[in-house]
Image (tube, rainbow, N blue to C red; front, top):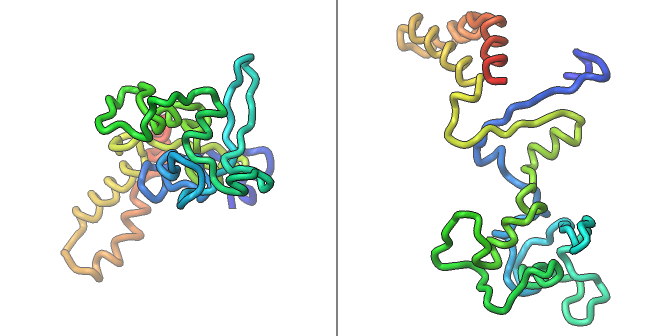
Length: 196
C-alpha cells in the first residue's frame, strides 16, 4: 500500500510501541534465556552470532555444533561452549547469579552473554520484518506512552466521544466515524513533528 501510494524510492518510518506482542522474537533469535549452560538438552536452535577476535576482526559463530562433531553432533552449544570459543569462560562462572547486581557486570555466564554485542543487538521479529521490507523501525521505550503520538490521537477521539455521548452503543457506532474525522490532519502532523 505504501509503495502504491508513494512510488519507489520512499522509505517509511514506523514507530512501534513496546508491547509484549511487538517485542516478540523469532524462534532462532539470540536470547540467553533460551540457552542451557551445557550442550544439547531442551534449548533453542539459534541463528549464528558473532564476536570480535583479539585482532579486532568480526568472526561469525555458529550456535549449533556441526553435524560431524564427535560428541554433540548438530546440538545447540550452550553458554559454556560459546563463552569458551570467545575466550570469556572461566571455571568459577555459574550459569546465573543468585542475586545479580544488575549493573552490567560480568558476574555469571548469563550476564556475560547478555553484554555481548550480538546478543544486545538482537532485534524483535516486528523490527526485522519492517527493516527487511526496506523501511525504518523505532521501538518506543517501555512506560512512556507520551512518546507515542497515536496516544494523543486516541485521546482526542475519546474526548470527542465523551462530549457527544448518551451512553448507548448505537450512538457510539454513529459517533465513531465522526470522532475519527474530527481530528485534523494538521494536528496529527504537529504531534508527529513534536515526537520526532
